[in-house]
Image 1: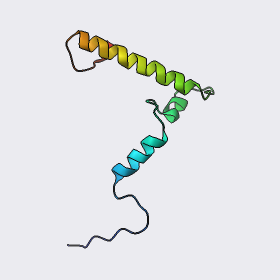
Image 2: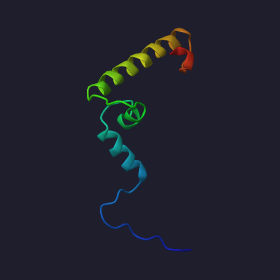
Image 3: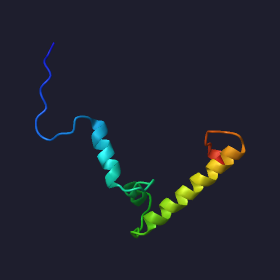
Image 4: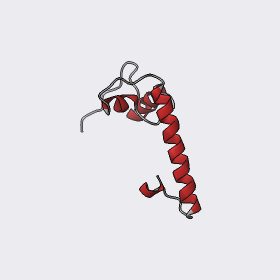
Length: 80
């Protein structure tokens, strides 16, 4: 069997650590800014993303209420 090489430098121990750091740098937005930019052909203002995030969170909250009122614990597309 081949021996594993020792890690050198300040590289993260796992990919999970890197993903967590990446998530923190995006802030608390649900929708990726990059993907939202790629979905349109015109310019997007900086405050659009906060409004989009609020709209998505409201949709999710309403969908959750509907699922709970129907005695379900799973969100489905028709809850939107």
